[in-house]
Image (cartoon, rainbow, N blue to C red):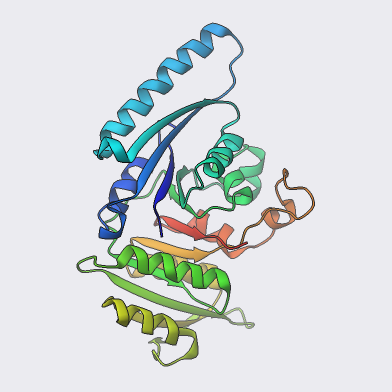
Length: 282
């Protein structure tokens, strides 16, 4: 399910460490990785030469650090606007997953500061794994999935099951959070029945693969509760459905209404203290 990975490496951040944590999953043993470094446009030819040399060094270091079979990893050095290049290369290789760092900027700040991760999150149709610069990357053996009846949630479940398959000691945390119109937040007895229609299909799939699981049902503000539970349960990876967000008319422009709105995935990518995998459906 994840065979081609695009790892966007800026030379800072934790995208390399994130891949190493993912690579411990038996399901990832045959995945190929394209490591991308983008050189922003420079004013002079001398500056461009310096940046090319620096970029080549970053790629070489990253490839060496991943410790993969040379047949499974390649480096790509491109020049241009990083936001556009990441999206373009993801399309070129038909990436099953983009891994990239994020400063965790809030929505408006990310727009004003021309955030690369926010732009790619907004405009790419590929699943994305965002890892903030200031978090500790844990071993990924406990994965939490936010469930509802959407196609995006179903895709999230498939990704989580793929990563946990044959992983010794792996655990799947299935979570459903119902909004409470009163504005209060509380866990409804914590553990939920696996026979609840929200969980039944996911539980059946987990049992089929021999994956340990828990079902949690909560009431409150969904985005805030997801972040709280991720902390409380020491989650290594949060998988969240996030439909493709490109505007239908202007495909080349960010959807500002959605950026400035109160989307669940926008909140979680900023405030979750663990890596967030955003599953995509068109």
